[in-house]
Image (cartoon, rainbow, N blue to C red; front, top):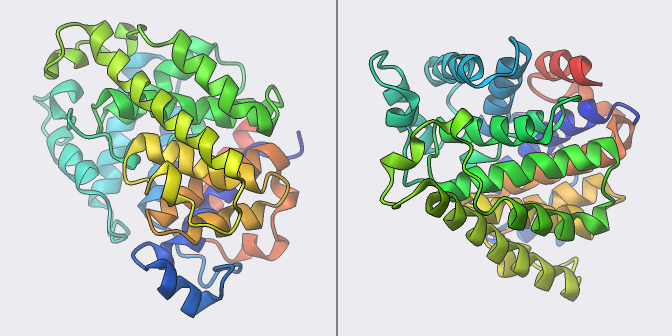
Length: 329
């Protein structure tokens, strides 16, 4: 249990910083710049909106009791502060920007403000702190994970993928599930939740969609995540550590692909966190989001001492990462 919350938050930031320079590069361009193994050292420690919004979620979690109304208001406040920050210059996603613009209208509920058709990876790139808070019930962890996604990404697949991402971090952080058992455990979780609509956390969000019932709404998301987990099994069975991880599990621009492609990178290198985030950074897809989630899994599993010690002095937002990880370690 050695500093696993710190390992996860710093690991997320390390992966984000390592993958940011390669996000829009082809595999050929990455190899030409970094060699066949890809980047293995932080160039500047500069992160993207992935880490910035993770810190926003962490601040909302730490800011008061975890209950739906208060947490939603704190998330709204934190997301709006991020949206107008001068540091918000890291090519943030359009969905997050559009939703935050809507959230800025005090007369609009968050259910009306969200982009209900979007399942972009912004839903789960920032959810790791929900997986680090101890002493939560499974229902509260699931509700909080879905709610933080739902304020910007209202698509049911974004909600389901965020819940699974948070549970993967939590199970690794507390040692409840071994890395090799994660895909099966996540599939079981998805099947058990397939018809569960968390009205206490989501309110009438489903009514913003075209679905005929809340159960139909959520089932769509869980089914897409189950399909993605099947692709993860296929990629793990192949066990190719050198191939582009996006080839089988997807480029991770959407939430379910961000979940499984980042898991693939971690599970190919469960004892080598630098190799895991390097594999994510060496990809043809959303490399910073893939690597940041792989870093969160690796850090939650192995703890902070598993990371290169000098990176702590390089990474951006280290004070925030220290502050929130100390609350949960």
